[in-house]
Length: 344
Image 1 (cartoon, one colour):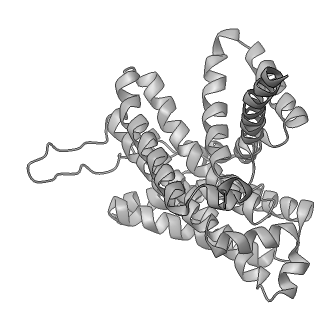
Image 2: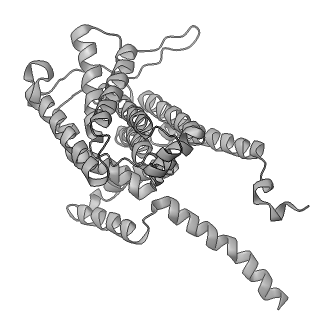
Image 3: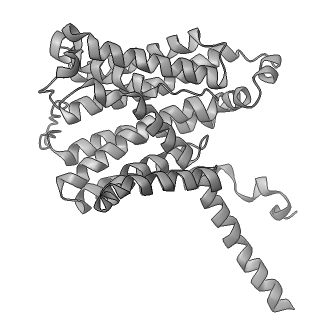
């Protein structure tokens, strides 16, 4: 029996896993090489911002693309993570990595709390509720001056502590190269964890809820619990990005987490390809680097940036992933057409 009639048998699962592991290895090599290629601090800074945005984008995609929850308040969890880790370190003397985990937990708890209160809301109603939550968080950060310093900001935030291993030079994160390796390494780790989740029965459950919540409930799926779970996971990743952001920039002001940040993250997910996991990664990289490449156009760069986003949404609603799939389909048909023409 030929495997051509059975596409599922054409590529064994073991071979698929080997191919995926190969791609992950390639990505790890690229991460290792990038700071060596880009030596100046300007582009290394942009690389770190790319890695932070990848965390934010895949976290939002897990909530929106897989669970179908329209969350417009992702910047709130980003800010909670940044301020929680910073205040724990600077006011209570908590070690960085303990503060990092605590920031993720607090952001996750905030996301689950929002999801529990808004569990009966769907579509634009949930979007408005999450947007309102982001406004509340921003106002708290801005006006609780005794805790957050408000518009004055928090300064002199230290980078993650050095790592000293026997027989190895001390690894300091004060430089941009090692900081990029740290943030990009965690971004890759989070991607791998989410990749395992979405390929497991959990991913199928979330997809069922996204497609038809009523039908999913009729099959015994606890939609409320799984939506809360998705919010918790996505918000935890935003909290991790916030903790790294504070330690990287060294300064915290509330305006870094305004509502427009949520729309920027949403644009990354949509432009890359919602519900695909790899799409938001490409969207985050593109929408981080593109404004920098257009900086030479002055004020016109905003027009070009907006036009590019509009064209993608209008003509490729599936984002970059859809464009790649269309290109693969066309290239896959070329040899067949040429062979048919030869036989004639």
